[in-house]
Length: 203
Image 1 (tube, rainbow, N blue to C red):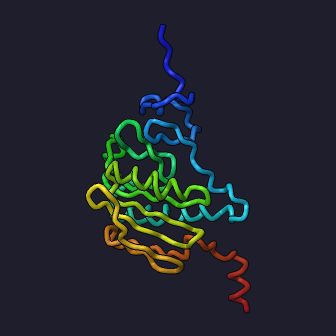
Image 2 (image 1 turned 90 degrees about the vertical axis):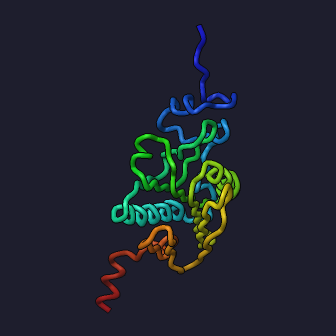
Image 3 (image 1 turned 60 degrees about the vertical axis):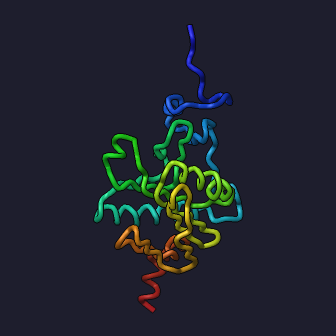
């Protein structure tokens, strides 16, 4: 009797049907039929451990508030972007304007956001950059907390075109999301402690 292949084995290619049979706590992505371990954003000891998750959280919050007013579904890391079999990429944040596409799992995904960690730069800028373009994701935002930089790419034919490059304390207001305004400083700066606010008001 034939036995199903173990998708956790190194043999390739892995199919989507095998990929979805993996345990829920398996964090690997499926890229061109190969299971790839996600980069750990806390591998570099000199970097603040809060920087990557804080930036992800701020972007997620801003997009969720925008979607509540304008429509759409925003999801954090863990939900793969629908794509042809053999490629399943999992962004830090994604937005789908049509909720029915999320329910059906057929896409399209309108926006993906990747926050670069100290060890994920090449994957985010090359592998995922080309992968998201190949499957037709309309916009790709790359956020680099270390460089205090946000780059917005829009799909132009089959390739991405750089539409905006903002740094430091600039305000990000993409025209494809009317009403959205993200002060970039909030992505790489923690707020003061409540005690600090009280002390300054008393002074």
